Image (cartoon, rainbow, N blue to C red):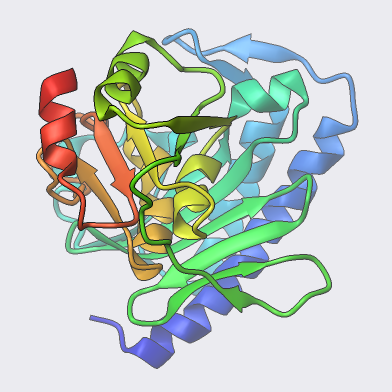
Length: 271
């Protein structure tokens, strides 16, 4: 395992890599870019590939560890299963939001060690805001031209729960879960991994995700919310693990900041 200081030094470099990728994304964001479709009907733009190429090139300068990116996801499990440590990257998380030009997309870079996310950077190209964390180093938010500030989850109120929800993937399961809480709630809809970051910084209490996501969608933000005192788990409240199976799809998951509430009960009655 890497030491606390090694992770801290590495995190500084990865923050710079994420910003470089963000600059490439913004160059294309300012143009009349074309949108293609992947085989799963999800959108793909030049920005996805530009960010991917930048991140791969820069990470290879820093370490010799393997890199698994959304744009290089066809690496077979027979090869991946031999990796004890690797980079897990979503070069442009929230491509649908990028296409809509609403600014709610991010660059996600995570370091996975023994199936766990031990470092995460989530960078927002439009605003220049960074969220980042490393194991035993705490979680931080940094605004442009400001010093980084530590972030923490908040204690969950009995009423007026703030729920983070997907901008592009809200559905009936989420509405059923909210209704089953039996308290007043406020739904905040936002794109990409920013939903997890809202929980990490105490601006939302929970983020239930009853839909398909991939491992690169959650890995970076999982480290951030965990180092901020929160949790990202499957629906049995077990932490998500990475690179444990052939499929790179996540199970349905649940992000929460306060462990004092019986979330498992609410999940069970809504699923």
